[in-house]
Image 1 (cartoon, rainbow, N blue to C red):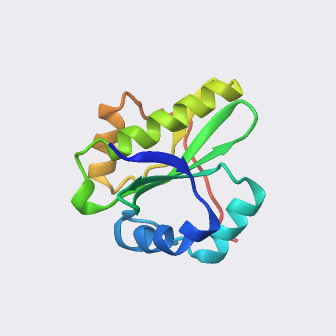
Image 2: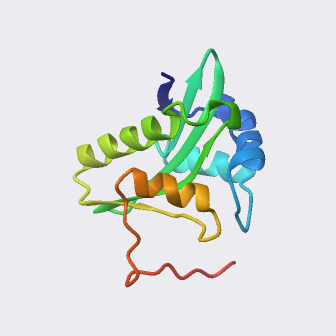
Amino acid sequence: MPAIRSATEADIPAVVDLWNRAAGPTRHAGQAPEAEQLLARDPDALLVAEHDGRIIGTLIVGWDGWRCHMHRLATEPDARRAGVARALVAEAGARARARGAVRLDAMVNTENATAIAFWERAGFQRDPEDQRWSLLL
C-alpha cells in the first residue's frame, strides 16, 4: 500500500509528469506554475501516493467551507487496480470529515468511462440536477 501525504514543491515535476501521462481527458493538463500556486495557497490541497520513493498517484482536494471538491485523480498505469486511487480518496474523505465537510464532490470528465466506473464503485452518484458550469479564463 502506498503512503499518502501532502505534496511538496520537490514533488511537482513528478506530479506534472503523471498528470500529463495518466490524468485522463482534460481541457488543460496542469503544469508546474499551477501546481506551485496551489501549494503556495493551500499546502495540503495536493495529495500524492508514494511507493518506493516514486509518486504513483495524485488527487487535488479543494475546500470551500462546507464541502470538498476533488480534481485530477491520476494513477500510474502500472499501479492501477492496486488500491492507490481508493487510498487517495479515503485520505481526502478523512481530511474532509476533520474539517467538518458535509459532502465530497468529484470532478469527472463525462468521456472518461474508466473514471466514471471508479467513482461509481467508490459509492459516488452523479447528481443530474447539480451540473458544473465553467468558463475558461
